[in-house]
Image (cartoon, rainbow, N blue to C red):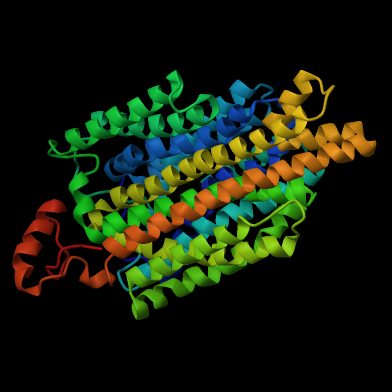
Length: 540
């Protein structure tokens, strides 16, 4: 049942913000926390490099494919109801993953966790925007965006602490326990909000969007492993093309579409969506590879490596809170462009890392990276949610979450594949120059640098040290390739934002004041006729 939130006190609204950020951290941390456990997983379960990528990406692919329809379902049947159902599924799948002993079962559990996360995420932001009045909403959204970025770091710190004393299974067991705690907190502090207008769920649109997003990521991952013109690579890209084209065609012909694709004509909506996609693509690609740099090259423990990323969180949280003020002073476009520029600079610095680099060289690239995440995320999120009326905040939130998760999945796939290719080619060349290396050991080393270091440790002596050196040099080669790709992606995002993003939130699409009446009519049509209380169109 929908609850009235118009008379909530300031303290009650803060309670809602706490509960929604707790649920958000649980979802975001589950994307990043597994990165620290990949070395242990590789040694314990012996997955291929491709399977390792799927253990990480099964979660984000499922989340990205399902978050949009679950956002609409939450609008229809109550956002807290769907969020709590997702929390139950999420916790149960994490508990099963903790006792799994096969790669296939672990991938399946990660996929189910992604489905639960897709039910959780839309409700977090849409509940916040439904509960907070307009004058308090920017700060609340900025807090949410800050935790959406910093939550990944917090998850890795917690995972690192667990891995100091326990196996990788402990990360899943702890996640299951935290899901129970978050469930109770949400029931206690959060109201159940929903769209006052009941519209049918677009099931066909949900299937087509999932097919398109899932096919795209599948094609990237399998293409990197088997070749982009291989049968599986072409199958993935074919499904992506058919799904996304079919989705656009179908949505344009529906009275109640899952996502009205005409909304991308709104500057705030389109620029915010692309900006967040780029940011999370680069961020989670970096987390996947950057953490491994500290583990493999610097030789840090899991906890030490996670703590090594705390400067990112220390930068993100205050910068996220400052972002609304920067937007007010310099504008949406300038703030987002500055963030993407900082991201690009960070990647260029990180691309210079070698096997001889130290932690301070690493941090030199990480700090501008963190600044870029904060400056690009908050204004982009605000631009999206400001583009739609309050009654459609589930769709706005789901679109915001979809772009985040699509970006995360693509980042892990693209930068992870670039790293795997660079590392594999370099280490294979090194091993080929050494006669007598057994074929099975050589293959295992080319699949994972963690396995390579483990083998070198077991061999010991001069030969083991030489092998460890080859692995670290090869890791640096793969890292450089991935970071340069990240820099290119950041530049592409920068160009798009400079072209498409509004100068300021309040003057989106206001290029011609003489045609205001026609513009209002067009935007009213785009947003289903919903206008703000003062008669303005709810644009970003």
